[in-house]
Amino acid sequence: MNHLKIIAATHKNFDINDIGKFHIDEKEWGNRLAALKKNSGVEELMFLSTCNRVEFLLNTNREIDKDFVNKFIASVYPEIKTKDAERTISSALVFEGEEALKHLFHVASSLDSLVVGEREIITQVRNAYELCKKLDLTGDLLRIVIQKTIECAKKVYTHTNISRNPVSVVSLAYRKLRDLNVKLDAKFLIIGSGVTNSTMAKYLKKHGFTDFVVFNRTLVNAEKLAKDISAKAFPLSELKSYKNGFDVIVTCTGSSEAIITQEIYSSLVGNDKTKKVVIDLAVPNDLDAEILKNHDVNLIAVSNLQEIADKNLKEREKELAACEKIIDENIDLFRKEIKERKIELAMSDVPRKVKEIRETAVNEVFAKEIGKLDVSSKETLDKVIAYLEKKYISVPMKMAKEILITEVSSR
Image (cartoon, rainbow, N blue to C red; front, side):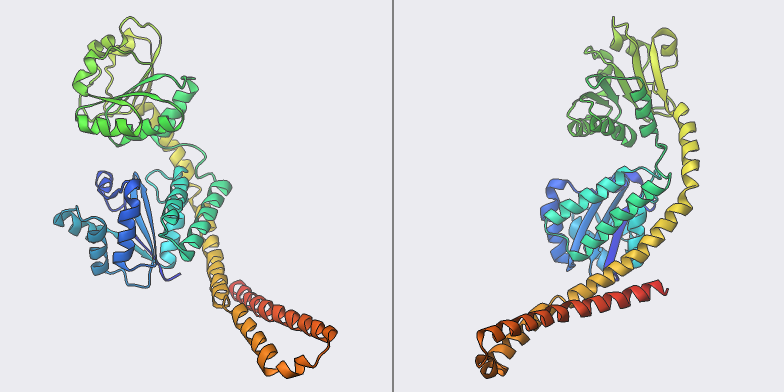
């Protein structure tokens, strides 16, 4: 377990917007991560990237000191400028051995997440491992680590209420939208392409919605989000002249004033008198309050979602002690698992050695004596040797595991 190391940039030590600098497009994983594994001299490597963390899981006996992290960051991110690289090196979190395992259990169980209890992280961990495995970056240690990590996270989600009620405004907004029975072919106008709106848009796409148009002050950012959700992109300045209709507006910008004015909203609606849905996740609101007086609108605003979110978060926090207990129990199980695996690996060569001894005994040491035996006697001797061979392999393994179990139980 001491060879398990983690280098991490998370929302706890970096601004979320800065974490984006460390993401690597999945198309580049093969080349960049294979080169990283080779250059850093590690036995195994796994890369985990989400909206609020980037982590590297390593199997190595090398010391993860400042010099290692320096070369590691420079190898995987040659494009990062010297100043940013120095800050990254000094701010990166490093976990080793059991501390690394416990950190990973917390991550997959969503106890280390920006929003505690959001279950999507367990899928992200599993998918990241599967891709790294496919790229031949991982091996036996990370296989066991991820297997036990997923098992632990499932127990946390199953046996506690840590993820029962949503606490993110995105999850709550989607739930409100679902309650309104909005059809999957509804037309969405996405206004703003920051972290919150990008998360909301991708969440909608994940749940089957397909018709999106993105508006943003900076067109290149609108185009980036549009590419992720298969949409069209326009500069925000063209919103007032958009005439293709909509069913739902999702808006979240950093504007200090309402950007969807009465004039713009009336232009967007035109002669359509059907009730619209506006999901306004901005603070202050992007939607002019006067619009609600003059138009039929179902408003889902961050102001009326935050109270529910805060209440749900407090309920989740009550579950933390139960989650920690499950994690500690699974750390103990992992210790046993890894020791058993060490025994299996240590004894994996025994069958070959036993076979060599058998061949030497039969064909050299006792060749003359065996040659004098009749057919029936030779068959009986073969059966006896095969029986002894089987027992010689299985008994020591069984005894070693029993000793191991006794040691773990006595703690």
